[in-house]
Image 1 (cartoon, rainbow, N blue to C red):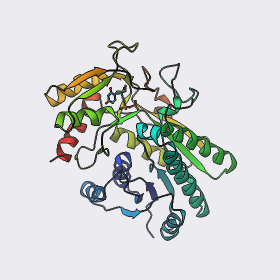
Image 2: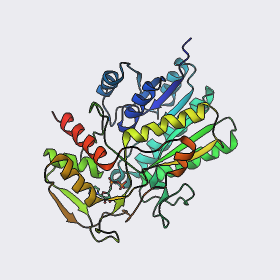
Image 3: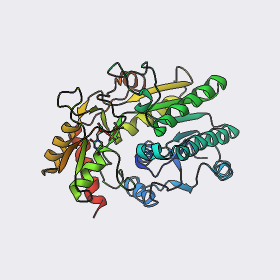
Image 4: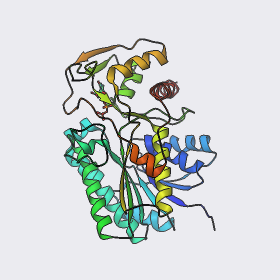
Length: 342
Ligand code: UDP
């Protein structure tokens, strides 16, 4: 019998999921990916194999289909833990199609929890977001900051999901959950074989910048320069995706080694450093040695002036700290974009 721990990764072909799978394989875990390929490509599996030398098991499945999910989990016996990424994530689209977002993100979670509980899989890592802090009054944001209703239905699915998980953790003492609240993940694997490839027009700053620079978009709209920040543009805590996924593996090990202090834990994943939109643009121009076409436009609804993490809890409890700086992150995003468009 294999001594490797078996980890189910939902959404394992996606941006953060695929980087996590690579890190799990590097750490000697056996990985089973479930993905419906709605916002990802099957080619990712081959690219994971190119990076790691191991092809993870892949099952195409929509988590809303409980019977299919049940068959997969029954067939792949003895799964030790689940890392749940699979979710719709386009903020703007979620405002237009809230029902689709609640149906997909919440039904998927409920099905997964129900099925895994039937097979006594008690360990769960959840992909959450700093969006659950809403418009925080106190910075930097610690895990003690109160959550608020997020601006978008997408954000609200993350908040509701955490509440569901906390309720289950309160009622089922065997259930262990760690929720990881991401700040702004950017960047790509150093191989440029996996990275972020958004469907259609990107919502997020980095893919919009790299797609503009490569000629797919005419210009970047900078959403407001009249915020109460030093250069007037909003400040965010950007974190390299490879740093981010390393925290997942640390959280998983904490869970599997029964080191959790309670069966529902939350950690912020950020660097603790805030950079403005103009800082990001200037850094991009430096690392890519080119000018970026951009214009200042009106503020975007729901944007807050400043968000950055206090990531001390993750440092203390997970022994994890983000290592890569803004230049590293942006360089890797740019290298990925250039390779992806070849
Ligand atoms: N932003 C921008 N233009 C864009 C996309 C984003 O100016 O096309 C700004 C946005 O206003 C915010 C920052 O970039 O201040 C990060 O936005 P993103 O959507 O990447 O992440 P968020 O922090 O909103 O989750």
